[in-house]
Length: 77
Image (cartoon, rainbow, N blue to C red):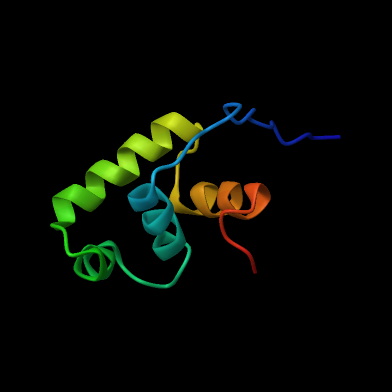
C-alpha cells in the first residue's frame, strides 16, 4: 500500500494581519495580480508574501497553502 507522506506543520505559527489577509485571498479564485490589487500592493510584494509563507509553513504550492489554512482554521469552507 502506498502511503502519502505527511509534512509536519511548524508549531505555533503566528501570522500578522497582512499575511492572514493574503492567505484568505489566496484561498479564493483570484489570481496573484488580483490579490495584489485588492491588497493595494505590487505583484512583487504578493510574490514575497507567498514565498515567505511557503517557507514558514513548509508548503510547496497554493493548494498546500489552502489546505494548511483550512486545517488550522485560518479559512473556513
